[in-house]
Structures are given as C-alpha cells and as structure tokens.
View 1 (cartoon, rainbow, N blue to C red):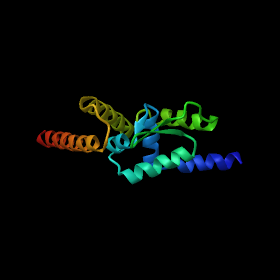
View 2 (view 1 turned 60 degrees about the horizontal axis):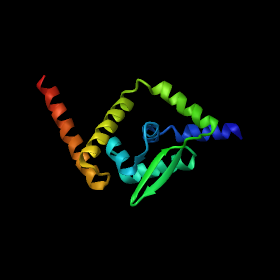
View 3 (view 1 turned 180 degrees about the vertical axis):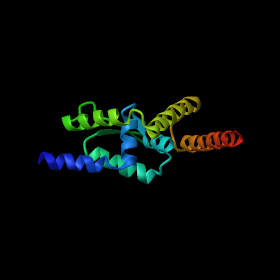
View 4 (view 1 turned 45 degrees about the vertical axis):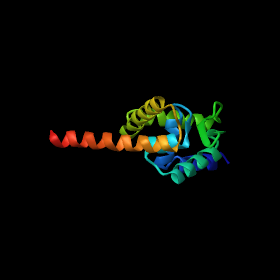
Amino acid sequence: MFMREVLDLIKLLSDQSRLRILLLLTKKELCVCQIMGVLNMSQPLVSRNLSLLLKAGFLKDRRDGKLMFYKIKKVLPGKHQQFLALLHELLKDDTTLKKDLRSLGECTEFQKQTGRCDMETLKAFMRYKKRKSADRNKKEREK
C-alpha cells in the first residue's frame, strides 16, 4: 500500500502548475485570484489543481465571502513533509520558482496599495504585469 501512495504523490506532483501552486502556498495563504495573478493561469486551471492538492491532503481551505483561500496544512503526513522538503531542496535555485516568488511579492504589494483582494484587483494586477513585461522587453531590445 505504501508504494501506491508514493506513486500517487509522484503523479500528483509531476505537473508543473501544481508544483508552482504548492510551492507558493508554502510561503503564505493565498486566494484563487492571487494564484491566478501570480502564475498567470486561468481560474478553471487553478481551481482544478487546488482541488487535487486539497484532496491529496496537502492543503486546507477556507471561505471568506466569495473568496476561497488555501494554505498548506500545519500538520502534514510524513511523506507529504518529505516531498515538500525534497522539492524545496531541489528547486531552491529554479528560475521559474524565483520568478513566481517575485510575482507574489509584486501582487502582495499591489494589493496593499489598492487595499483589496478581488477579481477587479486581479485584472488590474494582470494589466500592470503586462505593462511591466512590455517595458522590460523594450529595454532589452534597446540594448
């Protein structure tokens, strides 16, 4: 039975979207719209992956009005803890993860400035990220 459980976890974590979401959630509790904004993913994709991570026992959820928030469970089964520790060790220098963490910081700061966490704020953040990316690409082309 143990091997089957390990194989199921490996299958679950073999998806880049789920890995990115899981590693972001190790930093702080996030709502669906924050994850969408940080990772530039659609709501159905984010929700589907959160559902799988929740069902596997990694996450805890809570509702606040219309928003759903997710975080890593405080007490995880041993194999879950071991997988998370291994992922942190293996991916500590990963450029995608570093980019995601920068984006999380930008999203958090953006939300502090607006004082809101909702779909309108997400859309505004996405426009902000798009402009910032376009500006960065323009500077690189000018070099």
